[in-house]
Every structure is written in structure tokens, then in C-alpha cells.
Image 1 (cartoon, helix red, strand yellow):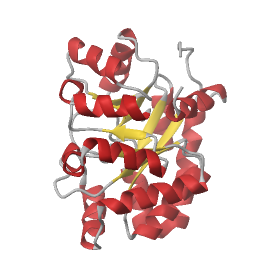
Image 2 (image 1 turned 60 degrees about the horizontal axis):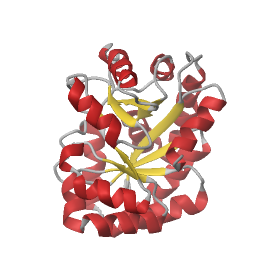
Image 3 (image 1 turned 90 degrees about the vertical axis):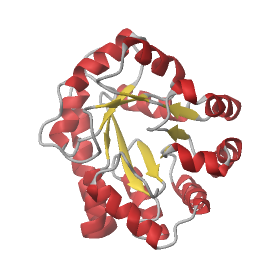
Image 4 (image 1 turned 180 degrees about the horizontal axis):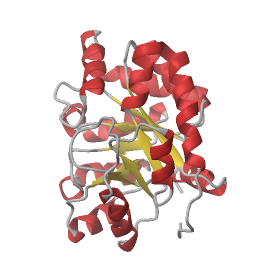
Length: 267
């Protein structure tokens, strides 16, 4: 198993779901973003998801867009991503996945990106805007380097698409809870439960649910049927409003939701 799969398995062995925490790199500055990611690991996050700032973040909600705009204005460069990952992985064993739009990877060079990510200690990529059938170069690079490739599945995905996503993904399948951009929602779309069931039917061993999860109660709900919950906006807001100490407190509170009883699933 990869480091990401091992992290999910460790959580399951402890009788809980995995907690995946997202933060943008370089917000509010590079060093603070590194300390913030380490704080996630120290306060209950099982997998860190780092987002390099991008000028056209079509999937990001207002709070994350605000943070990435701040990071870009402060002079973020792609090299900063690998600097951050190296510092984080030297400080913690929690695996680090990069959540990136595809254009920056293409501009950097797919093989070069994979090699630099591996050298920095990264675990793989989550790629929200490229489908497996268009990702041949990345699939080849990930197989060569052993990096995880996490593709997205949406409630609107056809059975054929889900089959392709399951077969192409490693680590886990990123299960989109509802259509739209990231952010907090008072009530998660019930489509997420149905979608995880469909993914299981197509052979997915690990499915983590993201988009709209912001409370421990929502994490507990997701834990009833999925292998993990992904939180972003609530963590970015905590960092923005209260710095690393507030982020640590919010992370601990959210992590409490992972302890919800889970049904037996084949892993």
C-alpha cells in the first residue's frame, strides 16, 4: 500500500475514518503555511492536502480564492510548493498530497513535476480538472515514481466514468459530495452516500468525501459510509481569522467527528 493508503488503513484499524485537511501553500506567507500544515498533522489530520495558488481557481469557493489570491500577490512561485512539502515531510510522517489544477503541471512539465514532488517527499496528486482518459502522461509518470493519483467522481458521473475513475485512481477516490464549488454547506447532499455506494459497486476500496464539509457532525455523518472526510474552507477560515493556534483548535474539534462508528466494509 502507498503512504496514503496506509494512513487510511491506520485510521480504520483505530475504528475511525480518515481526516484529510486542505490548506493553500503560501497563505498568508510561505513559512506560516508550512507551520499551518504541520499543525494539521499534530492535531488529528491523517492526510495533508496542499493547494498551490492558481490564477483561475474554478473549483474554489470565496474563502479559498481569497487565500490563494493573497499568496499569489505575495509572490508565490512553483518552487515554493516543493520547498514547503520538503519542510512539512521533514517534520511529520503524515503524507502530503497536492491538489492542483492541471495547467500548472503541464507548464512545469509532467515528468519534471513528478520527479520534484517525489524528491520533496510528496505522496501524489489530486487532479480536479483532468479525467483519467486525458491523463495518460500523468498516469505513466505516477507509475514510474510510485506517486498516488487521485481522480474525482461526481454524482453526475456515468457508470462507465466511475469504472474508469476507480481503475485509474490510487490512494483513494475523491468523492464530490455535491456539484459546485468548494465551501461550507449547512446540509450535505445525500447524493454523496449514493455515490460512495456506486463507487463500492465498481470496486473502490477507499473513497473520501469532500466539498461542503465543515463540522465534526458532518464528518461523523460521512464516516458512516465513507473511508474519509475532506475539509478545506473551515480550516482556511480558521487560519485566516486566528492564525496557526486557531487552526490547531479547529482541527482538533473536527477530528473528533472521525470517531463515529463505521459499518464493516471490505478494504
